[in-house]
Amino acid sequence: MTLLRHTHGGEIIERQALTINPAKTCQPVGAMYAALGLNRCLPHSHGSQGCCSYHRSALSRHYKEPVMAGTSSFTEGSSVFGGQANLHQAIANIFTIYKPDVIAVHTTCLSETIGDDIPQIAEKAAELGLIPEGKYVIHANTPSYVGAAPTGFANMTTAMVKYFAESTSPEKVPGRINVIPGWVEPADMREIKRLVQLMGLELILFPDTSDVLDCPQTGVHEMFPKGGATVEQLRATGDSLATIALGPICSGPAAKELSVKCGVPQTTLPLPIGLDATDQFILELRKFNGGHVPREITDERGRLIDLITDMHQYFFDKTAALWGDPDQLVSLSQLLMTVDILPKYVVTGTPGKKFLKRMADVLDDRKAGVEVRQGPGADMFLMHQWIKNEPVDLLIGNTYGKYISRDGGIPFVRHGFPILDRVGHQFFPTVGYRGAIRLLEQILEAFLQRQDRECPEEQFELTM
Ligand code: SF4
Image (tube, rainbow, N blue to C red; front, side, top):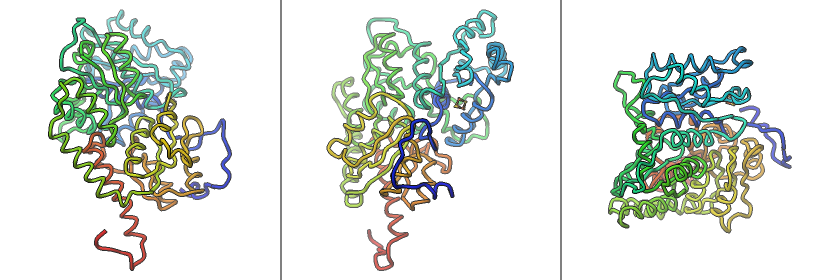
């Protein structure tokens, strides 16, 4: 905190080989989260214990749930000679003791650098009889020096398609669609399921972390909670009528893989956060249900528009700084533009094609004076420098923004991953029309709390 107070503004020096306080987290975290959305699956980190501890603790601290995962526990020997023996031992132990249906192995920087060939190791494990009948070992390569957590999510979701999806007939099942939700909260996955159900469609959602990371308290610990997409569902994705990928970076690759492997047509949409992106999602669903949108959904949309009308006077001409995952940032920026808040500074450490172009499309004729950065050097330090030079009215992003918020006294809405210092976020969706209502309510609350706290006595109003 003290160090951040010394962040200087003034001239900003372009950095090529130095990232300070990155606006991203490492690939395996995303792979682990995606694997948790598979029913009776134990994520497994093929690397050293420290990596696995970090990934588990990041997820546990965000979701306030015990996150289970195995590790190959590399030591000096495995770092030199490779991790095959460790992974074989792990597979044998996990299936014997914990009895999952699936072990989802992701790699780490270390095992990638050694060059461990996971499919070959898994094949050998099968030959040795370490994988019981009807059980599976799947894998995704997730070197953390390439990509970030959304890349890991995308890689593990694509692995689910590669390992399980099947096309049993050229005729697709009428009225059944696949939705890949992107890295969103369990409550968002519930909300997506509710919307698709209201549209009268049969849905396979994968991965699905609802009822895995938002379980009710029963007093009994369940190693494998009831939620998650099942292996049978994943197989059946190949016979669905279509796939909707929500978020091109997190969900696009799996949808494309399914299209190539099983001939399931796919559409990639922005994450349905905000009015426009939710409209796009509903309009896409409408193509498969005969063109009907039920009254319940149009009413929710109408309530959101009413709320925007009521709140607009407080939002108009405000500015915001955002950081996090590209798929989230594009849709959040669009929501802010809808209510006339300018997303003035946007940074993401996650690489991904077309992010800058998508942001330019969202900003349209407001691009001038807006800073959008991606990749190395697009970090929280840079964002803080921008804010020191020209402050904004609002911060939206993960917990790491609290230092900048405190330093500048700037209202802060927590959104994205990780949120380490608040509880309950996993229960409230921000997707769909209802999610947008929740987000706007949080933003207005942040603005008005500041006004009440800082305004002069004579402007301290009862009615605002
Ligand atoms: S960056 Fe690499 S070494 Fe560090 S925790 Fe992530 S996977 Fe492990």
